[in-house]
Amino acid sequence: MTEPAPLHEDIADGPAGGRAFWLTTGDGLRIRVGLWQPEAPRGTVFLFPGRTEYVEKYGRAASDFYRRGFATYVIDWRGQGLADRLIDDAMAGHVMKFPDYQHDVRAMVALAETLDLPRPWHLLAHSMGGCIGLRAVMEGIPVASSVFSGPMWGIRMSHALRPVAWSLSWSGRRLGMGHRYAPGTVSDSYVLTEPFETNKLTSDREMHDYMVAQLRAHPELSLGGPSLRWLHEALVETLALSRQPSPRLPCLTMVGEEEDIVDPARIRARMRAWPGGWLEVAPGRHEVLMEDVATRARLFDLIAGFYTGAAPAPPAA
Image (cartoon, rainbow, N blue to C red):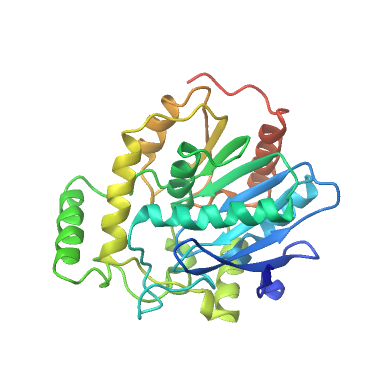
């Protein structure tokens, strides 16, 4: 029997009637999923959040999909949100092996089948969720199409810093310090400590305030910087995925003009090689779906049209 989980509707700003559930993964961890579902939906969006994110952050996205007739099904990955944290320092973003996130994906899919969520199913994967989502579509997750937002198919860093990141993350793990924070990161939440003026997530102050208010109201949802082990596993996984061909699955990828967290070059390279793939460069920073009202409306219209086949043909590569 599916066990209900908390859903903080006071901060989500999602549609009425949202639900959340606890799931147990195949390797024994407890994670959480959230669901918002309109009457007679046109399908279900499996929404894969990024690192540090949580179900409630996508309440407004669920409202956008709700108005366009889609159910939204969101996950708290292991190690973040209300899912089980993996090491004693609950603020450190950590994972043992990056493919472990596929245990979470499989548990999410299994519950969707149990709940008989409306089909067709579609993927929307953001940032770290884009890395997890790319692995999932390569392994055959049963979705009809895929949309990626600022996907972490590479981590943005200077050419000089890249070998240092590889060396430190590898040696830290070997020396039993994989739980330590990656250089330049701390235990504090980026959203709560970085001023709006210099943040890399959104150029829209109201959406920035929305994220800040959520974590102030429910600090248990917050997460700090990544561990050395997370960094090493992320570098290994993104490199491994870059060497694999794209699946024959309809794909729309969106990236902000001011992207400065993930590697835009890896995104462009992937989309040039994706059969029939569509790359949409949008105004804004890393969180293109959390920009100003006009940008969000245009992009959610584009996604809904893409899911239903009503969007215009993708531009030529």
